[in-house]
Image (cartoon, rainbow, N blue to C red; front, side, top):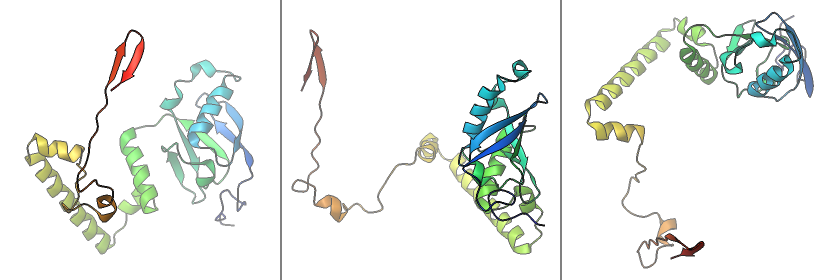
Length: 205
């Protein structure tokens, strides 16, 4: 029987609360009662609080040093780097989360995870695609990115500053009609106030 399309195997919707078996790196299994829309950040925080009641808690490092891993309904082992994701959005095969220390480049894996969520498939599956149109698109977009980086890096420091902090410039020098109505005879009036502290009293000029 294939996995259902719901939030959990055999459930179109997760129950309001669910017991998640958390497999700790110390070898301890901690059953944790969670609400269905709890974020992974909340689950991890509650888990570390609950872990204080179990053996070998002193062997655990900081909770930020670990990530959750589980098996999804697509029969894929997935590492969850985005802790803002909700429990009901993970499409778990079973309510089981394994706590592990991430291996390799964590920043790169986080980026791959975000890209996978954006394109709707794991990055490694996208890399394995042999479609000529996909390959041509990736080659073209890579060239566009390279040209953009070269133009940006060849400029002066003000060009780099404009890239990091892009100015909000209107395409037209004319005021929008909605703003034009609020002007006083076509003028923008700026008022400045300063606070002066004297003998414990605050005066506003």
